Length: 252
Ligand code: ADP
Ligand code: MG
Image 1 (tube, rainbow, N blue to C red):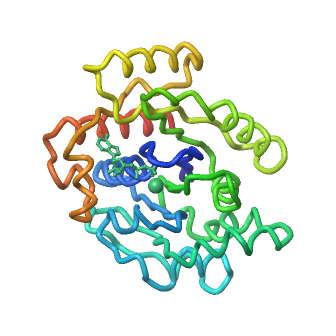
Image 2 (spheres, helix red, strand yellow):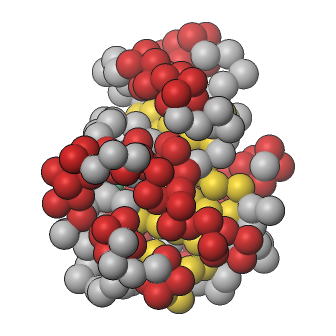
C-alpha cells in the first residue's frame, strides 16, 4: 500500500508547489509509481509539469462528484509520474464544500479506488487552512511542511501544528508529520543560518536533514513546464531535491 503526503503550509510562497513537483519527479524517476494531485486553484503544480490549467475533468470535477479520479488522471513527461490536474474552477469548491455535510472526506474517498496503483501520492495544497487543505489532510498519511528560512518563518507554524493536531484528533488519526523542510535557504546570509538554527531548536527531530538552497534553476524550471531534475539535472537544486526524495522514501 502506498503512502500519501500532503505538502501544506497556510503561508504562500514557501515552496509547497516546488517541493511537491520536484519530490514527486525524483521519486518517480527512482522507479516508484507516483501520483501528484494538484488541489490549489492556482494550478501551479499542473502548469509546472507542462499540463494546461483548464483540462477537464480536473480535481474540481472529482471533488464535486462529477468525475472519478481514474477519469481525471493524466500522464506527465516524467516516467512513472501521473498528475491529477487542478483548474481555476477549484476556487468554487472553497465556497461549496463547507455547505455539504461530511465534505471533508471527499478527496480521501475519491482517491481510495486508485490508491493501490501508486507507491507515493503527493497532494499540493493551497496557501490556506480552508476546506481544500482540510480535505488533503484527511486524505493524507503524512504532512510535509515547507518553511522558508526568512524572518517570519516561525510565525504561523504553531497555528499550523494546532490544526494538524485537531485534524488528527477529529478526522484522521493516521495523520503524522513527515517533517518540516527548510526551503529557499541562502547559507551566505546570517539570517538564514539563524532561522535554520531556531527552527531546528524549536522542533527537534521534526526537521528534514536536507535543506533546499535558493537556486535559480529551481525557480526557472516551471516556466519550461518541467521539474528541475529535467531542466538542469546537475545543479545544486536538483541535487537537493534528490537527497530529500531519498530521505522521504527512507522514512515512508
Ligand atoms: P508555494 O507553493 O508555497 O506558494 P512555490 O513553490 O510556488 O510556493 O514557490 C514560490 C516561488 O519561489 C516560485 O516562484 C518558485 O519558483 C520559487 N522557488 C521555490 N523554491 C525555490 C528555490 N529553492 N530557489 C529559488 N526559487 C524557488
Ligand atoms: Mg503553491
